[in-house]
Length: 260
Image 1 (tube, rainbow, N blue to C red):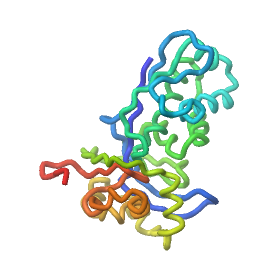
Image 2 (cartoon, helix red, strand yellow):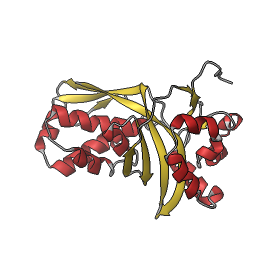
Image 3 (spheres, rainbow, N blue to C red):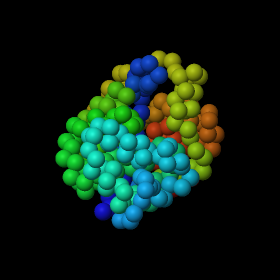
Image 4 (cartoon, helix red, strand yellow):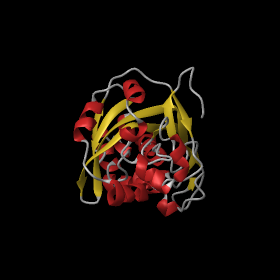
């Protein structure tokens, strides 16, 4: 009983408004199938919900545990708790933490999908998305399982975007970008006028065109804030795009690409 939890990149990310403490955005999410975590259910005897593979995170802080709690609250189905007395969750992490690649959100979505299948919960996609939206803003995207989508609002509006797949290369910076701090810094020090017109134009552009015609700092409104907090990103700002709030960088893979 195993499932892959793929990463994602934000081809562009534009902040277009505020909703209380949240930032409304328009962004292109593209799934990265060749970079993924693995979630597996293994048999055994356990006196509580058990997760292996995330030993540096407290169980109560683990997004998979939080998803388990929300599933129970939503379904009120005792079969879920019973199942995890006889199974543990084993996570094989390949997606870097704090990299802006959605690893935690993907793990949460994949955990729900596997539970729905294995425990036969018979939850609809609408049900799963309703649960997922309470766990994290990126979770609904991974539940829809689109290759590419425009995501707006505070992550709850997912619109499939049909386009040719693109090959990407990545640069993993050895520095953790705290998502909350990047957004807070953006709001306090960088936020000026919202580029709503550009955001709506980018929505209709293929990802390949964005990566070849738009400057990386223009494509992601969080880039400057991330550089403020993670200076190691600065040397790459002219040629590498930033995914989410960082710190992973990417660009289109082609025969002339280099890791400079």
